Image (cartoon, rainbow, N blue to C red; front, side, top):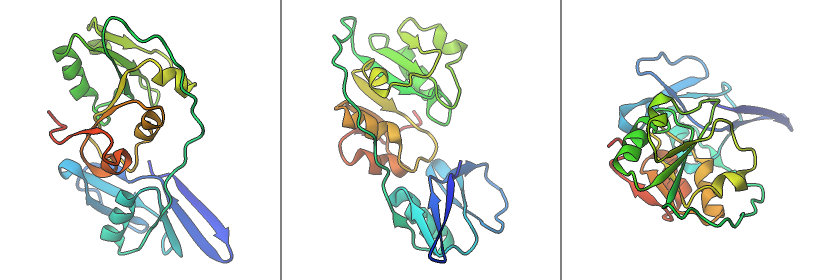
Length: 212
């Protein structure tokens, strides 16, 4: 889960941290590994090259985690997005459409399943991620459209929705889906914790009781 990039430049080792990794509580910290707390008491593990000259992080949230668990300062470089051209579709006359990507429990799949059951007037588009496709419970709902394969064209994917939901239950460093949705002018509803708040920048509906 930690994407590491070690670069040799003028005798310095630069380490890029993609995000902090979720591990079950009770894991042992060792060389190049440090533990800290995440949302809801979840344990987080940060893996790093021992004694790097510089530490890079992709969000302020990750940099703060690095400082708290290792005492090291991390320099923040926010990720950039490739140009995304909006596709102006006709919309769905049957009602508003919500896009949910990666229907795993970590990303809020169990919570969103209950939301979809409670809101039959909203059409939910569920897209796969990490190779996961929505399970059988989703297929029983008439207001859910399941994409069996990943949509490579991001514009086509977001054109299927009127707003995007990011109900992550686990720690996120800087969710790319929020940045992409906002770049296309789509409203976002997201959990209020970790790097989701930083990505939203006060431009999303943030849910404090995100486990409910």
